[in-house]
Image (tube, rainbow, N blue to C red; front, side, top):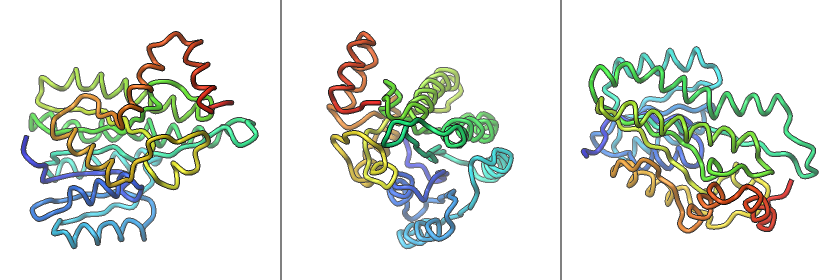
Length: 255
């Protein structure tokens, strides 16, 4: 599989998004980076330009689905995108006292983690299908295997992305379009540090980006890491529900 020369990444101001942008940056590469924070977006772009990449930036909130779709469709129509990484995301939790998630926060999370991903794919897919090629990477999480009591909406959104990406892969593979679901564990970032509960096997964003890039190059259906944390998360999904609940509680993820 040839190295992607035209790469679009949403959430490029986040830890993983920024690391992916830097990982792909180089001579002959055209990056299209989206983010909400203009200063952070410019900083990432400057680093990527210094590595030799051509960089376009777009400051927008992915929750504005109409604006997101217009921008993505226009970009996909003008540029032969080899790789689109739907990375933008957020997290919330039930709070230190277990009071629960605010509906307004849950709504914002679902718009960011799920609806914006479907909107992005819908916008770029016509151009890819007409060319008969391209790659779409969707950011799920190991939390998509089994719902943790401390982050119910986040887990729900990532489980939905996992199922959505797997369905897309089966549909689009005969058309030459590769779809990959990325399922990282804990990656050091402000969002990760704000999450309650234990955080085993934490990776740096750079290490995560290397694993993601390698998995995309190999066209792996699920890019899950790190081992053995990914094996444990998968086992939670296949064990009897009551057993999984007890294990999760013993590990320190309590409501």
